[in-house]
Image (cartoon, rainbow, N blue to C red; front, side):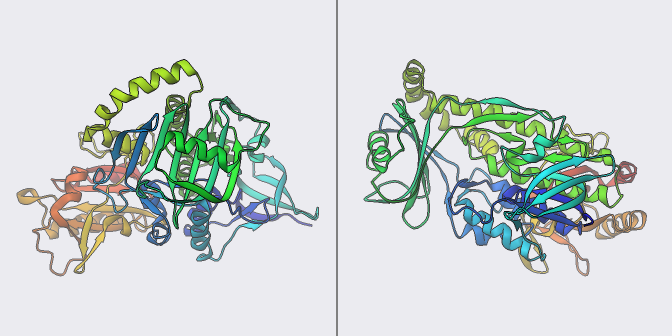
Amino acid sequence: MAAQETDVLIVGGGPTGVTLALELAVHGISFRVVDKELQRSDKSRALGVQPRTLELLNRHGDVRKLVSQGNLSSGTTFYLNGKKAADVDISGLAEDTAFPLILIISQCETEEFLDECLAEHGFGVERGLEAKSIVQDSEGVTVTLSNPNGAEETVRAKYVVGADGAHSSVRRAAKGLTFQGAAYPQDFILCDAHIRNSKISWDRFSLCMGKGSLAVFPLKDGTCRVVASRMGPKPEADPTLEDFQTMLSQLHPDSGELYDPTWITQFHLHHRGVNSYRDGRLFVAGDAAHIHSPAGAQGMNTGIQDSINLGWKLAKVIRGEQPDSFLDSYDRERRPIGQHLLETSDKMFTWGCSSNPFFVSFRNVVFTWVLPWFVSSRNRRANIFKFISEFGINYRDSSIVGQASGFSGPVMGGDRVPDRKIRNNGEERHFLEFLTPDTYHLVLFSGLGEAAATKDAMLEAQSKFSNSHPDKAKLHMVFDESAKTDGVSGYTDIGNRLHEDLGCSKPSYVYIRPDGYVEHIGRLSGIKGLSEWLK
């Protein structure tokens, strides 16, 4: 039987794999996404969806539907030896977004949302198919898929992406990839259960340290997750509900009584990362590329954003708009993010979950005095949240982003595009809602006050770019709130906040990639430089 051909074969149908499928679908690239499991897990698994991930998923469907199914967390409460030590409030720290808080929700609901978005394009995950053999050559990749009955089929793909987790078959098939790291020595236990007579705040999650460590995440409908690291583990014995209740009563008094558990398990954690996210025509993303502690709730989010970075690049190469070498930028942009995440989460984990009794005693004394002082500063809380929320991710060091000569501002090439409310045809909407994932976007900003460009000058600049680069990007114009734009198709910047966030007080342009990051930025007077950049 002849091999079935496709542009991209995605191995792994979790959030990372389905997100990549969505990115390819909007670009009209042929793909298949397969998963060896016959059905999705009904366990909650990853709980935190970070604000930046919500922004990016909103490009594919109304993510507010997902938000309505979970809990929005406005901060963290720290406990030391059973006493409240500090309360970290993150509300109001992020103003340039429609999604300023962390969503706490079962991975089941996140996967259901992604599946529904993919179904809108007429696609779905093909289940019960395992990649038994993956062999690449200079022209493509040949993959043998097997179903539970032993029947096999051969697939020929231009590229194969491993979104198949820590034990990735794609990574193992890549001769040039290593997965260096180690296991943490601690023993962890996890419980999802109902809770009653509780005084916990349902808009906060709790981190508790003392003799052992404990985290409590409130879920919907009177349930919560409890994750614990024990000082004296008994790995030969399965954890019981009583084990969790004992630690909860010790480290988080008045938290309530656990009952009717839906999931109890025991596990160990690893921290590992690949030496490259690409090996020829094979790519890895998500847990196939990096696994780490759950500190900071970054894992699933990082995998989703790996896929968002890779998808549009694959599309451009497959359509012949860029050479194959353009795909090297995936590794150059995303691997430093993964490495920084491994290092940072490892430090957070060591401080929070060390099993060394001497270090634990030292940590608890230090935290008693230092923690309340540290989180009392809004600037320090904002810096922490910038990392946790993933708003701080940028690709400024990438060779495929830049800015006009002499341009300097708060946002540069490689940065996230901030979000503010704008007015369009009398309706207030968030700016990012107009940045669809299927193309580039060129946004012309009028500038503010006396320095602002006239609507005629804006229209002329728009026309020149459109004539020189037809079908290169969707064009948008954003005007000063006081500008008169009768008869002109454009947006009004409410409060001129978007101009200010982007450093566009003078007439400017912002050229935005399909993944929502700035590719090039400069003054409108130098827009010819953008044309040179695009060549």
